[in-house]
Image 1 (cartoon, one colour):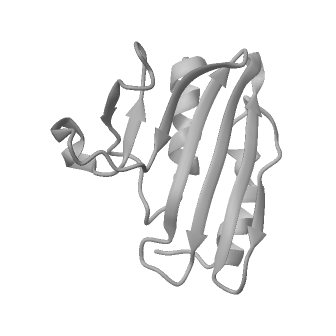
Image 2 (cartoon, one colour; image 1 turned 90 degrees about the vertical axis):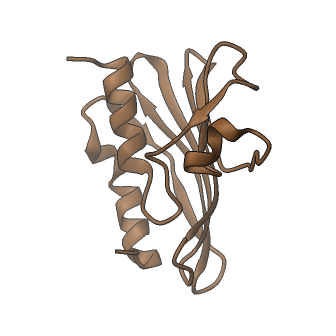
Length: 138
């Protein structure tokens, strides 16, 4: 179910509650009218892991996340990122077009499909869970 701007804003400001490894969040949702907003900032985890987030939002649309970039750093070194930049000439990305993840090696050009990223639901829970699994395994 699509959240209202107020519901999403409340979720954003509670994001630090999703993981015991989060030290703080400086995410800010800035309204640009009744239905438009931008989300930007970072969630900082223990062990110098940081998730930098930017989203363009239009709560009047079914696909309410209209653009995004999610970048994960460890010790200020970029580990991977997600973006919604279209790459129509890359058939390997077609299953999740335009959602994809940039990974090593050659992080700028090595892209894989991103089936867990969406324009229709909040991506924050998945992104935090992915960081938990990758950097803080049990």
